[in-house]
Each structure stands twice: as C-alpha cells, then as structure tokens.
Image (cartoon, rainbow, N blue to C red; front, side, top):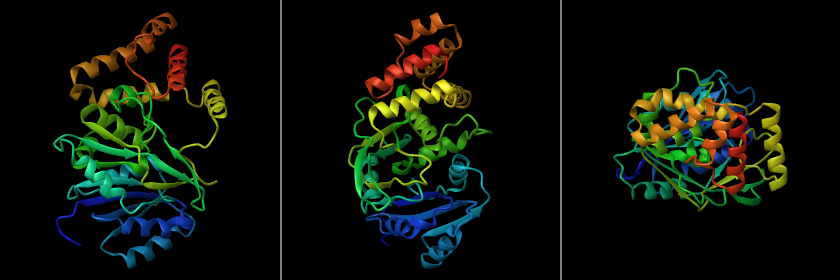
Length: 314
C-alpha cells in the first residue's frame, strides 16, 4: 500500500448474511487506488455470519475490524458504526451485507468529492446496477435524478442509496455532533445523512453505477423492481392503512430540533413554514402546498407528496 492513497473506512452492518459475505468482502478488499479498513458491526446474527467474519478477519487482520454485538436493528446498528468510526480516515462509506462492489467504486467517489470544496460536509452517492441473487442484471436504479439534491428534496424524499454513499470527515463530524437521543423518528440512517449533508454542504450524484445491488427474497430494503402502477398502488395502500403516516413530518421535526439553530436562515424559515403549515387545517395546507419549495424528483411522486400533505398524513 502506498501512503498517499486516500484512506477510506467502510462501515458494514451484518445480520444473518452469511451466504454472500465472502464475495462481498473480497470486492471491498480489492478496491483500486484507495486504502480501506472495514469496520463491521454484526447485529446479533444467528446463522454462520460471525464465524465467517472471524475467518475473514484472520485472513485480513489489517483491513477488517469486527464488533459482534446484540440485535438493535439496522438503523441503530449503522448509527453505532458512525459512533465507533475513527476520524483518522479521509472518507467513509456505508456498505450493505449482500452487494458486490465494482473495483473502482471508492476511487470514483473520492475523485468526484475532491473536485468540491472539502472544507464543507460532502457526500457522494450513485446509481446502482440492480441484479438478481446470481448477479444477473435487472436494471439501473435510480435511473434519473432530474432536480437538485438539496434540503428541499431531502426533507421529503431520499434518493441516495445508502450502500453507494461515500462522505468526508466533515460530514462524519456533523452527524456525530447531534445524534438523536432516540432513533424512533429517524426513517433510515442514509436518509438522515442526506438531510445533514444537503443542509450544510453538498451532495454529488453519479449516474454511473459502481455496485451490483443484489435483490433477493431476504432483502428488507432497497429499490423495487415493481412496475409503475403496482408501485403506486402499494404506496397509496401503505398510506391509507397508516403504515407510513406521519413518518416524514416526525423526522423533519426531529432534524430541526437538533440542527435548526445551525441552519442557514432561509433554509430554517422554509422548513419552519413547512412544519407550521402542516400543523394547520386542511385549507391552510392546500394554500401552502401550491407554493411549497419542497419537491420529490418525479412528477408523479410530487403529486403524491402534495396529496398526502393536504390529507395531513405526511
């Protein structure tokens, strides 16, 4: 290893993921033009995951650090990894347990981040090449990000896939400074990072996929291969049945409570008006939503967001 290569700490949370670990870890170890350390927190696996990880740690003692822990769930597990991470690295990357990284994934991300002002919080994310469990190509997702990756998007939509995220030390410090006392109102760790970086720094999106994003029956999260009609039927059904009610507004309120005093004044006023209007009656919500600066990326998504806002179910 050469000393002048960027140092990247990969934050990997595992849970009953033994089937794909060898293939995945090898793809992390073999990243080009960067020096990596993989910090792994196992979230109480009951299969052979920990045994496999111990073997891999013995094989790569300088590059793997394993922390077997009890089960707390994916969000808390990743926040724990953020707290355990070391500020001696240049960049940090989230990693899911069953994907395979292309050899230039990290080098490509670092190169794009280095084109920006690195004194501010920065985050890179990319499209993914979705594949079957046997790595057969399905589609690229997300296919298109037509509008800016700003707080005005991040407050109500996460288009940044966590396992593609690479961020700098300033972002790590920003997140660690104000970790919520309870994570009940955080929808997902990657969404929270997107919110933080979009509010205080810059987010870079790369349309070129650099991971094979495996879809299989054990996937809990991730991009869906559903068709458009099926996708929206399911989404509307979740809202009607209450499964998604109020999660966006709760997360937004939690974010403002922690970071509001530090936010640029215009951003703070816009978020405050959003939350204040949401608390009012249906006529006030209808009046506000017509001129709201917040948006989702697709036109159809935007109409759904406006409709749910008016219903007071956001």
